[in-house]
Image 1 (cartoon, rainbow, N blue to C red):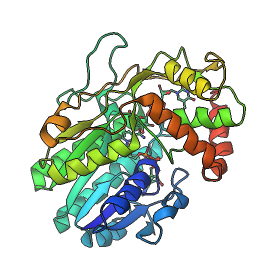
Image 2 (image 1 turned 135 degrees about the vertical axis):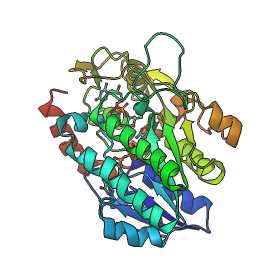
Image 3 (image 1 turned 90 degrees about the horizontal axis):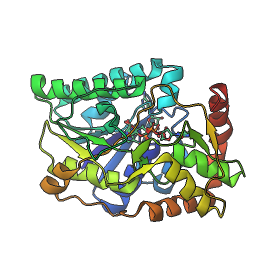
Length: 331
Ligand code: NAD
Ligand code: DAU
């Protein structure tokens, strides 16, 4: 099977490519990645001899056309992915997430290629902090940030291309991922690498916001389950019952570093900050038989801390630029 992975030099895409190469020797993998600040060739170093990395944009119609023509399936991870950046400058989010997805859809339509669109639970907006309501595949779209609005737009394009043009596509909407190779701008790697440097963790606002954490390896087994068993045109929600407040995460990280749990700073809150995400993944579990491997968040978090401690060469080159961006917004 010839697999074209967009955004394969980013966090989830690189883990997907590494897992695919390890577990599916028959797969011939090509990565299309623009190598933005968030992409890193070295994330694919362990599989460099098995994977072709094409440096280019998903919004480049000619390049996309030739790569899609040579693929059996396109797994679409490429995106501008960080909410805080979308508040500072939404423009690349529209270009990559909306125009880029449109460009891929037109190519898979022309060539009749299977398409899987990787999306986020943020398209549904947020849930109240109190209560046990969860997102389901029928929750109305209600995105809060420029990032989530552009992801919502891309999902709707995929749905329209399925219905109007018969494109063979599926969509998955996943909750917050953690694990190796995540950019240091994101919450958990930012705090871990701060702690390595002896800097106190930084919590937006009161830290009561809740995210539904899933290990990236579990996200990727679910993506393969949808590619292989998912029904065309359907949306599958991916989550592993990992609801945890930001405050709890920071306390756990401090403890893993042998520090006082409450030794952190509160910083300026994110404008429009979503309160809580929670996923009902019963469709994925019941229909496709998927189960997560990482069921204890604390264990997965400890393994992630170990990975960042052991791989400073990977994250150090990105750290100063990420912190400079945060300094501009007082975070
Ligand atoms: P990331 O920012 O770590 O990686 C994105 C990758 O896309 C980078 O390698 C970047 O270079 C590449 N890219 C950006 N613009 C491009 C363009 N125009 N053409 C080609 N490549 C381009 O993101 P991530 O966290 O790995 O997220 C991957 C996907 O998963 C995204 O679609 C995101 O919306 C979705 N998602 C992420 C999470 C999460 O918790 N991180 C959860 C659910 C869904
Ligand atoms: O839910 C899925 C989404 O999860 C993905 O679609 C996004 O691509 C991904 O970035 C992530 O979005 P979040 O905005 O939830 O993730 P982030 O890592 O930016 O922040 C997680 C939480 O931590 C959020 O409530 C904001 C808070 N935070 C973040 C940073 C960087 C802090 O308290 N302090 C920080 O320094």
